[in-house]
Length: 337
Ligand code: COA
Image (cartoon, rainbow, N blue to C red):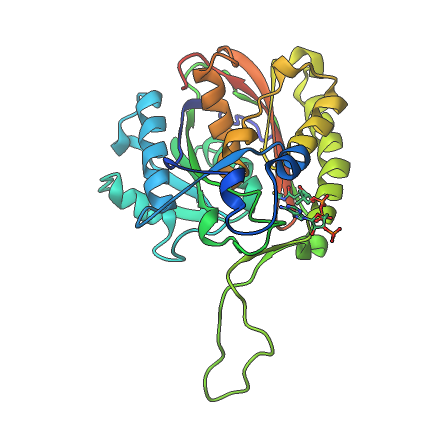
């Protein structure tokens, strides 16, 4: 750790999901499947999707407003915005620049997107930690927002059962009491196995040259079995290592708030930590996989439903396309959501 590293405070967290619910029964209108097949393999019963003109921008804006409100920080005191989306509705202007405008922030603060798929929130937190720790920025808004339903191949029953839309936001600031809310945080990637989850954008070459043999579809293509194997072999061990660097034991940490990709993957992490069900926050049943938004949605909803008591500590973990993965042990203060 750098000398005089400024500690980080998590000041506010918010989330937003679209109203429209698509159940497993609904999916039977698209292809041959059953609620039983989907639920037993994934733990998912339903997911939320945007409709009409609604996009991840609307969800991100709503989540950001809620997080800012909870943080008690004036929106004009935010000095950096980092957005993490797997596939934002538009490449540019970026989600973060669009949100800067929609939040009415007039000062010319930096706003940029970071792509680490479902690990985006933890990656963004690490970047924010570097900025805050070294005194470059003081109040950072992180927004994880995705409209996966727009890039899902709705004819592929192996992937379209999994994903849902949603957004989560976090305001992190320089700690005013010297207490660091990040007890440990690690992020990793392995591009050599990146083909496990791909979204290749539709593209073209200059009409004056030879065209590429294949053009992307813009849809998610996934080797579900390989992703599953990767997740259950890599993530539980990684989470345990992150905990060992935090100075706490797994037993001393109050909650596990994992990325919501598959209930069986969540259980593999739970088993590794020997946690009872009440310590594990899972809402995949109602939202499916909302990419980087899944952790803040689970956190805030967990508090709203009384499953998470504040103040407390939690271990978070994410993994996704790239392949990327990350984990963090955090202090969760009273009033953050
Ligand atoms: N309904 C009914 N049958 C289905 C189906 C569906 N929705 N999807 C696939 N099947 C069928 C397949 O066609 C296959 O049939 P076959 O044996 O006749 O060819 C059979 O079920 C098994 O398919 P398979 O893809 O091998 O299933 P699986 O046991 O690997 O489960 C996933 C598929 C997607 C549920 C599972 O691999 C998974 O959850 N992986 C992790 C994905 C993930 O988390 N990704 C995001 C990471 S951020």
